[in-house]
Length: 368
Image (cartoon, rainbow, N blue to C red):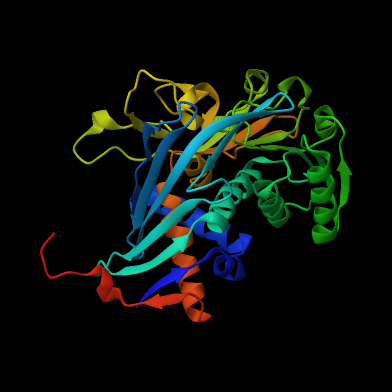
């Protein structure tokens, strides 16, 4: 039987600790050549509304450990401006609904094992990366988080930070007062920590050992001029890149790694976050397409280290409590979904969760 696993069921079985461990194992397997993945591929097509475009995104990977997964998204993408901030928005069918699925298969017999809604897992795998970055690059005594953003990514990242450091205080700002105040109350109660809800974004940086920008802004909201010595920086949204002032300050940049080149085609190796094809390529696109023709790659090659460098003992990562560090995944998304989705499948199956449908519905006797 093939399992259909929804977000509520994912939330019941998937913890941040399980996520971080699954991701670390997957990244190790990539280094060892026991796993492989490709960069995200986007297809963008203008809709009849000139202010929107359709975008299909997919990423995939698998391991000799047993699983392969494809993650796919079907989105209508557009941008809005609120209080002077431009944000990237998306929906499927209508605003408030989204279509993101993970198709999990067995590498031993090719069996379709599960279809999993990606909403909760998506937040957890991104936050897991944030936790790994903090684990290896933040000061050992890091206890103050400065956070821009108060949505779902902010919540899951706080879970990850609490998992790898003894966090005692959160300083948070987001543009909507009601949202940041509600988030602050929830985090104080959930983690039993001190929370300062900031009236201005400038206030989150003071004394922060971890500075996390976790927004849906289409442009960077970080202010590198305010980042203090010793801080570790994480960025989600705004293409995952800090502002120029932050990058100028960064002493050590941890990029987990890059996807391997296609077999037999070393010339196709890329460090780009995504590769895109577009209909009507001369027309401007929204979301990821607004940045141009190439997804971001390695930003600071002279200051870059990889997760393999740390795991193999080539470098300790941070060497001083005064260094400013920044971590990001690289283009390894495909290595994340099989690893975390595989764990979700095992845990959901053991707990009797998920909706079973006959696997025979996906099989045929005509050769493909």
